[in-house]
Structure formats: C-alpha cells, structure tokens
Image 1 (tube, rainbow, N blue to C red):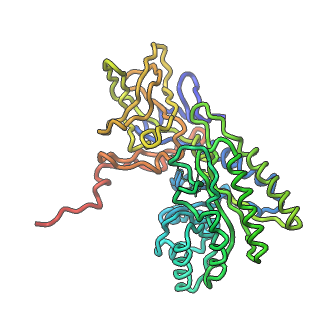
Image 2 (cartoon, helix red, strand yellow; image 1 turned 90 degrees about the vertical axis):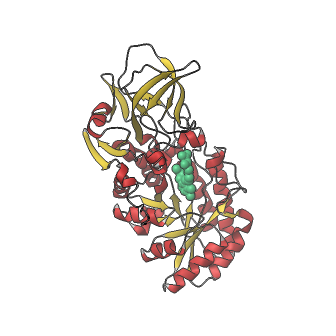
Image 3 (tube, rainbow, N blue to C red; image 1 turned 90 degrees about the horizontal axis):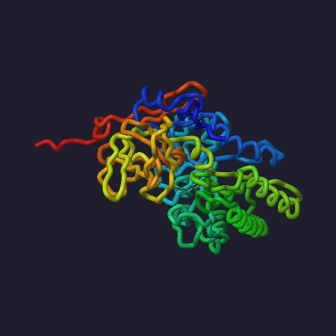
Length: 428
Ligand code: LLP
C-alpha cells in the first residue's frame, strides 16, 4: 500500500495535499508518512512476534544512518525499536529522541576512543567489532573506565549480495568485518581479554537486496561458526543478521519482510532444536531502507523548463546536495507531478541548480509540467536527508511528518547564515 496517492488529481501524503505542504513550508521539503513508518516497522515486529517464543527473543535495531531525524527515531523507539548506530553523534541523537541505550548496537570500522567512552558510559547493548585492533582498543578503554564491553564480531561471510558495488559489504574485498577464516581466532582473542564480554555475532552483506538467498547463505555460515565456538566453550547469546532488504523504487520486487523472516526463523529453529535442545538464541536485525525508504518523498518545485536541441531539462529547486543517490549510484527515483495536467507530456531530465553535470535527480522522464509545478521524488525516505550536504552553500531542506490530516515540522529549513555560523574571519 502506498501512503502517497492521488486524491482529486492532487498527490497527497496520507490525507494532506503536497501542494498545501509546499505552501506552508516551501520547497524542497522531505515529507514522511507516519503510517508508512509504522506499517514498515510492524512488518518486522509482527513477524518476530509470530516466530519468537520469548518476548526478549528478538530485537530490531533500526539503522539510524538511513534516516536519523529525531521524530523518526522517537516514533520507532515508541514502537519498541532498538538502534544500530555508526557514530557517537548517532548515539546522542538516539538518546535525544528518547531511545533506550540498552537497545543500541554500535557498528562501524573506525570507532574512536571518545566514541567508545561515550557508548560505554551509556551502557549500550553491544559493540559490533570489525577488527582485532578495535578489539584491543575497546578492551583498553573499557578497562580504564572500570567497565566491561559486550561485543559481537562482524564476520564477513564472503557471499555476493548481488547489489550495487558501493552498497555491497559482505565480500572479501570490502573493508568491513573480520574475514570468515579469521573469525575463530578473533573470538579466542576476545574471550581472553579481561574487559570484553563475548556476546554475539553479526554480519551485514549489503543493501537493497531483493532476494533473501544471499542472507540465508550468510546465516548458514554464521551458524557453522557459532557451533564451532560452542565446541570450544564460547557460547554466543545473540545472532545479528544485519539489514539489507530492498524496496521498490521502480519495478523491483523485493522479498516480503514476513516471508524472509519466516524462512530465517525456520532455519534457526531447526538448528537450535537439532543442536541445542531447542534453547533459543536471540535474533537481531538492522533494517534501515525497508523501514523508511518508501515512507518518504522529496517535494520540489520546477523553476525553469529549458529546451535544448538534444534535451529538455526541468530545473527544479532540489539538487544533488539534497538527494545524492542519483549522482552517487545512478539511483532511480520515481518522479510524480503533484497536480495532474491534461497537457501533452515531454521527455525531461530533472536537474538541480548545483554547478555540476552530475547534478541530476532523474533522467528521461515523460512529464506533463510547467514552470512552477511541484514534483515529488519518490522513495526518498532512506539515505536522502542523511546524505544531504551544504554544497554550493545551499541550506538543507525542511522535513515534515504527516500523520493523517496533521503535518508536523520536524526539521526547519537551514538558512544561509546557519551554514557559515561556525566559520571565523582572521583578524588582521
Ligand atoms: N547495518 C549495517 C552495518 C550497515 O552498514 C547498513 C547500511 C545497515 C545495517 C542498513 O542497511 P539497509 O537495511 O538500509 O539496507 N547510501 C546507500 C546505502 C548504504 C548502506 C550502508 N549500510 C544508498 O543510498 O543506497
């Protein structure tokens, strides 16, 4: 079900016309649907409830990097979500949004000492450790604080996630995780460190995966390792399979969340039954895109129509600094006109005002538009605002959350003065 649909020829977010949002808040503006966020999170939560015998048997750790607006984090926290973070800044956001640090896992290859101290002082659930040097640093930092750090090792299972090379993370040549072959010895090292508690295992093989076969393949490899560790007396309490389920941008047909989780739990349950007398292991997920991606759009206004011999351009007020995905990954986002027109359509490249040829948002789209019309760039809820920059001294867009007929401003538009407020002139 889409939470962005036409009513009387005007595109709405839930019950609010996008034209009304533009009138009130201007453009470009990111617009999120609360109902869509709730439905997407519930797809995970319901599948977990259905398959897990214990309330504490699963934890969904929403991947903050996909959309870190405080109101989004607040809503997910209220729904019971934990959080997957990759920086101290993301931890502070989670806390500011009312999230529970005891449900936070900390991923990333480059955690600084300061970030470790911050996370330990808030007693987060687990550090997803990605290298041996990181393990030693964490042991040292925890020791100095008189604490113990719970860890999971991010294991690189060397499976091909068959997605864009920039968002594939589970292959040998990627910078992430410890190599599968080295995992056992890393766990032995971890188990011998005085300020480390070995808690779990995790992996994340890539993003925008349409098929769950690579994830189930990764799961089998993790299971093998857990058994080997158990035979050495290293018992893990949780298994974190990462995020990665894709969404429909165009005509992709990603696996349904419930089906994927069903297959995953069936495999895990059979294994626990066979090897551990049915004693369960806690199962964790780190979804981002599949929760927020299709819950958001970027609203933009056509500034000029420019017709050249080779192409027609629709120059809009959003740009690559607002939505980086097309420039960075040649990503495809649907373009819908907010008001439907009867006039003849023409083929346009939708481009922004930034001084780069790479500043395009959509190419070769058939659109019936005039200057001043509003467009919605669809499926922009994930990795949209979080990847936005201030290139060309452009203030970042406003963000609003629609809830039924209500609209909440959840981030003000940046002013140019905000952008250089931290800079200084040099005194003569
Ligand atoms: N866990 C870890 C350790 C990750 O690195 C990521 C995403 C996730 C979870 C969440 O993955 P998701 O469920 O969203 O696929 N900027 C790119 C996507 C980068 C993904 C980075 N890691 C894009 O716009 O497509």
